[in-house]
Length: 254
Ligand SMILES: [Fe+2]
Ligand SMILES: [Fe+2]
Image 1 (cartoon, protein in one colour):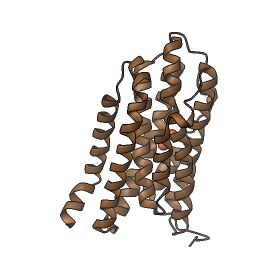
Image 2 (cartoon, protein in one colour):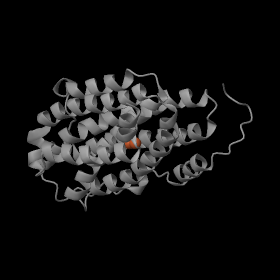
Image 3 (spheres, protein in one colour):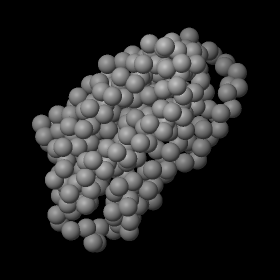
Image 4 (cartoon, protein in one colour):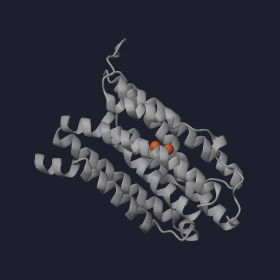
């Protein structure tokens, strides 16, 4: 139920919303001409490796627009406000990658070469529960973070590195949102619902392992490996799962 005049007392989400507003930026803040030093072979590899992130940014737009009405119609105006700013972030990320492909003059992988990304997308869409969605968005943000972090480290003084670093600042706010939202909601959930979050995590990781295998060749061009990528992402995800108390709470409730 939407309130005409909500009290707006949840300072944590309101502060995050203000940060979201002040953190906005446009494509004019990126020097798109900085492509020196990226060899044609590396450009091709980037074209392949950016593909899952590119689709992921669109999945993130869908995620935000699915979860926003669920949260707003249950009377939680403050987190819904924040999500509106997050939707603009994801739209910017999507637009920037679209432009990056033109600048690098390479193509993303065709869909048929990355069926796992569609499986990943479909797995997230299965759920109509806002907590499942936010948890899926968190894992997707960590997935994007691992890619952008890898690009930033490998191409520090180019458009790829600068764009990645700038995007990572937005992703950090998204993680702060997931942290606050999940911390509020987890205590209200039963053990079964919490276990479902871990099932979602495991399903997404199984899909990402297959995806990693397909991207191995391109990763090797950038002196990267699917194992290195997945270990970093898994460790990051586990830190969150523990920090949210998800593992302990599930075990304690058994
Ligand atoms: Fe994003
Ligand atoms: Fe994000």
